[in-house]
Amino acid sequence: MSLNQKRRVFLKGSLAAGTLGAAAGLLTPGAVLAAWNKNAFTSKHIDEAIASVGGNPVTTPSKDITIKAPDIAENGAVVPVSVATSMDGVDTIALLVEKNASPLAAVFHLQEGTLPDVSTRVKMGKTGDVIAVVKANGKLFSARKGVKVTIGGCGG
Image 1: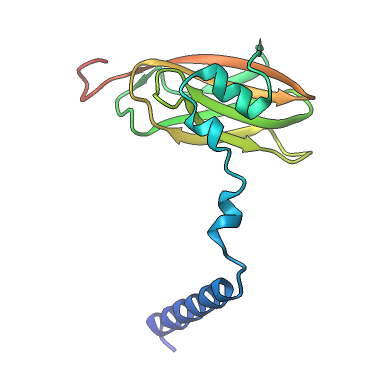
Image 2: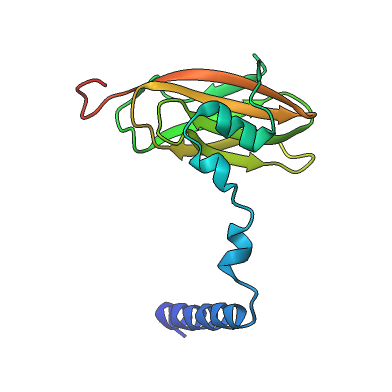
């Protein structure tokens, strides 16, 4: 059997399995979207978004949180950001972009024993701070990193 034939058999089998799963009710979008925190992601203010994620808008600044992001982002549509911490008991890491219309960019829920180190790409409309909020042992901690967004290399 050639590589193309194997690929076709695999794709047909995947399509059949997906169709069967959807028909059986195993892959329902409602179940996936039920966990989406609409209030947090549609909040217009940072404090509201933090409260929706962590239950309280008050955070304590911490030097134990490291944010890796470029000092200057030439393309604000895809800004790579990583957050890591050495804290124990981390169960949530939230990433916010200060100047965005909806500041909450991502929320990571970590299981016990997971290394608190996450990476993603965020969209930044303007120059401003990227804020990481870490929930550890029931308390909220935060760190900030300024990122200058340029548009076509002309400044922003």
